[in-house]
Amino acid sequence: MVDKEGLIIVFTGDGKGKTTAALGVALRALGRGQRTAIFQFIKGRERSGEQMLDRNATPLIEVHAFGAGFFREGDDPAPHREAAEKGWRAAEKELASGSADVVVLDEISHAINLGLIPLEPFLRSLRNRKDGLHVVLTGRNMPRELIDVADMVTDMKEIRHPYQTGKGPVEGIDY
Image 1 (tube, helix red, strand yellow):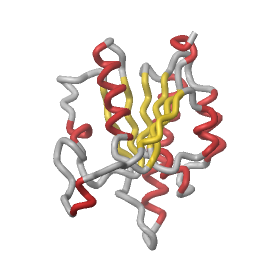
Image 2 (image 1 turned 30 degrees about the horizontal axis):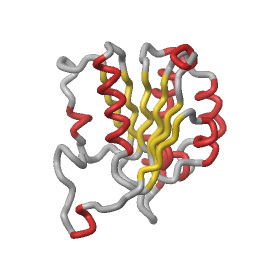
Image 3 (image 1 turned 90 degrees about the horizontal axis):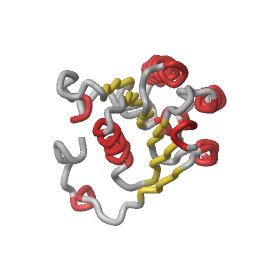
């Protein structure tokens, strides 16, 4: 039975909506009285709407940002690695023994693809997570190994985005 095992869900692809879809899962879980722990990798410098949630109004959703901002070619990897490792230690603890019903690992593909978090220990923690825990993984270029262990995979394909016409990000929609 899926509820007893817990699902691994992947939202990947080049289109917008990966984090948004994961937040939708968190909102649906909230409606069912379930707790969601969101761990954001890479993101961190900019405050997104979900990072600004009022813990008193939404006590069942907690957002933890562990990032040094988006990693660009030529950046010093040390602060990014340090932030990712700190986030991974917190997320790993939640996967093993936390009280969450859903864990979202936002932008995890980037942390793994950039070598900030090693793949094999990550896979081991996914396999050994507490019973019944649903895990949502987001990010572009999701490693094949994570797609292969997932129960559900959605590939977001961009058809049109305001960025193509030079419009910038929209508060409350993009962040």
